Structure formats: structure tokens, C-alpha cells
Image (cartoon, rainbow, N blue to C red; front, side, top):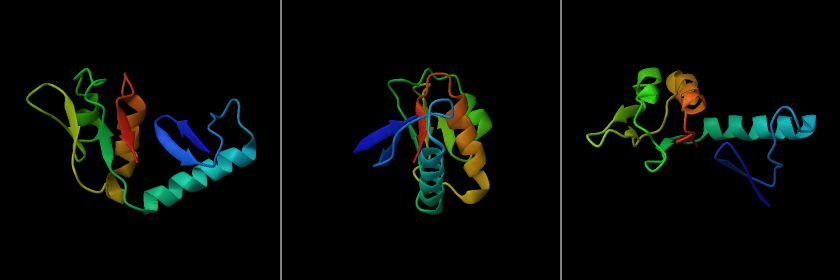
Length: 102
């Protein structure tokens, strides 16, 4: 089975949010995300969805920047632990959900 939660593909785990999820699934999902963060994590920007507001760059300039076309782009490199929180913050605050960290 494949489930998706906010753009993150989780194999064999029920996708849910805090309001409608069994506690066990939340634990599994948090464990999965923690394991994934210990691996090779990168930022991704959906150029079709991006409105070019620049919020991601202002929150996490180490990962996101604006291109000449006015759209955001993610650096093609692993996100280091010291900027992971700000990268996740940029993902959560994107007004059109164009950012994924995976």
C-alpha cells in the first residue's frame, strides 16, 4: 500500500493527521520521518504550483532561492541537520504547498 501525507509518500502506513489518526499510526509515521531525516533528504519545489512569493527563501535561504523566472528552486544537495528545521518550516508555510522535503 502507498499512502501520502502532505506530499510525503509512506509505504504501508496509513496517511492521517493528528485529528483523525490512531496513536500507533502517528508513532509509525514519526519514526518513518525520523529515519528518513537520518538518510539523504532534499528539498523539492513544484514549479507549476509555485507562485513566486519568496517565503521559502526568506525562511531557509540555505536550501531555497528564487530563479530568474520568479519561481523558487531547491538546492541540489542534501539538507544538513542544522537547517532541517528551517527547511521543514518553509515546507509547512508555503501558501500553495509547492515544497516537499523528502
